[in-house]
Image (cartoon, rainbow, N blue to C red):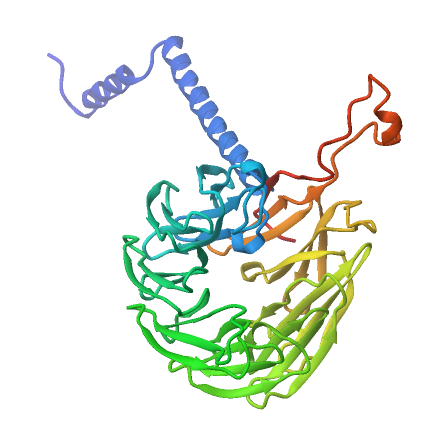
Length: 491
């Protein structure tokens, strides 16, 4: 009889453990194959992640459905749905495309730069308005008087509102009241729409064909362009109901209306004066005479920034004193205000030379000036990267035909220092920045260029007599197609 002491118990435990161990090479090989398969799976996943990062980290260029001719007025952005909206067609906003060329609303994914959808539009679209609260996009049409609604997530059509026989001339949004306002050239009517449903709420005739919204005060200001009357009226409407509150008579015909949120005022540009109105009542507070016809850019640090042809001017908002005037020269881009750093950035230049200025926004003192690429077309502030971007068409000949690539100048927003110049071909037309993703979108192309003609060196009279030589091009210019380049990182 076997005794069950400690020695026997240890023997049985060892036998049990031995029974659990693999006893042959087959089991050992199987576990090794599993380890190899797992390692290959991990390596494959890492490679896919690296490939995806490589595809999304660098610049990506996407072809658009047609030329972009309207610059910033042809674009809109919804940072919540990560969508950008661009009008494409062979004419500027509100103009008829030649030969019935199609027009589209291109919808881009701002995270990847991919074209999500191209939606056909009417004959003369203009003015993209995006309401982030209702996730709706509105596009007006000058010719057919239709306001088209689209979903800001998918780009799908969500209805249309016909204003016929009114012809839309201007469109604006008040996101606080969820109202869209459309001004018409016929009857000078201002139409109020519900931004959620697109339903027509009110029509006020005789108010004006140009308008602007002051969301801070809840007011809409409208006037009749080239009125030619004696009273020079500006209509003040309620931004919620669309009702006409009052009409203000000015000393000069209004040319432009811009809200000045810092002072609670609205600035109206006349022929030779700036008229400052109360932002809520519309009452005229002050008239500031000027020696030139002004174009209002904006307001910061108690100063109003103006341009006039080749000139830039800085006006004291309280006293009307001219703080600084600067001669920019020909082909100046609209100046850029950087309120965060208190700077004004200006650029100009034609043919083969350009110049850049960085000014103090309050004193007007020049902080930085340098040579720049000629023919600047747009400027934008990339606040997330502390960078200022300047897009330029580049050098041209005496006829205005480009003779080289365009460029994107990158400045340090803190001191105005030039960080880098990026060559671009096709040449840039406009800039769009999505702060939510940190991506910069450069619209390329869309400009006029002479057609390629291999036989152009032969005189026309002789060319008609040579049977094997093709006839000259039917048009002296053609419109380059447009594309958009997404930059995910700035130097």
